[in-house]
Amino acid sequence: MDFGTLAGLIVGIGVVTAAISTGSDLWIFFNLPGLLIVFGGTFAATMVKFPISGVFVAMPIGFKAAFVNEKENPRDYIRQAIAISKRVRKSGVVAAEHAKVHNQFFKKGLQLVADGRDLDYIRKVMTQEMALSIQRNEIGAKVFFSIAEFAPAFGMFGTLVGLIQMLSNMQDPTSIGRGMAVALLTTLYGLLIANLVAIPIADKLEDKRQREASLRSLIIECVFQIQQQQNPTSMVDILESYLPEKQRQIGARDGYTGNKKGRGEEA
Image (cartoon, rainbow, N blue to C red; front, top):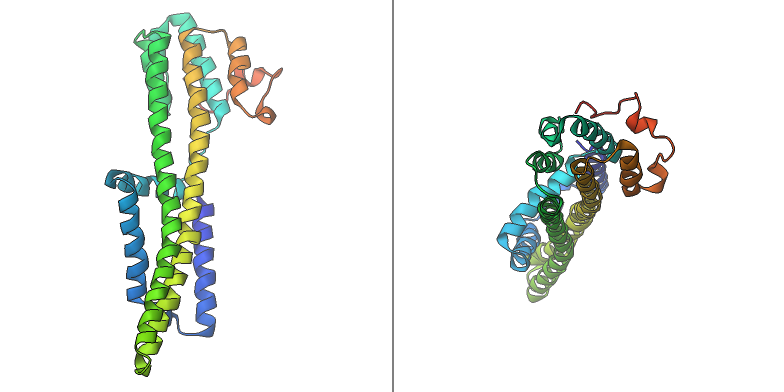
């Protein structure tokens, strides 16, 4: 669970609710026609812009990215790869099949190594799977960015509808308040949806896409090194190039190859 996201939503909703409740009755900010215009219009426009499969795939991916914090340390994969490489150098490529790894992408690569596949075949399969995974996150980010774009637009549309209703019935004083409520509340709904939900989730998906691309590139290189049965010292030099410079431990290889075991070295 990403408690930062949960806390942000709670604080955001709480602040808005408290600000509304302080000066007036909370229920006057509920307007069903305004909600229908903003939510219905935003959903309809999103369905027009994207394939229906893309929309319904993006929603769960987006909310999972927002509320599930998947912390993966690239160094752990380097440690795992070195431990597995030692076993493969000693017992052959079949040993890669029995390595205990939790990442399914890494596990698939090790299975390809254990099956005796050549390097070109492994590269083709793993890069294709990585591209498809990244593409799903890209589509998810685009869907939520579109929601952030459409919601304020339909809020403005609702404002125009409310003003038209108000101005067309000036002789009836009871209709003025109803029209003005639709006019103002739809803009409020659109801004809240865009800025409190859609834009933050879209940004998280974009960040996840970048982190996943870097991590999967490292995993692919780990699999390559295991398949080639590279020695641990050379593996450290090659694999650490995938880490940010401040996270590298060049010259301190004991953290990978020595007696100190990092998380995930049970392989």
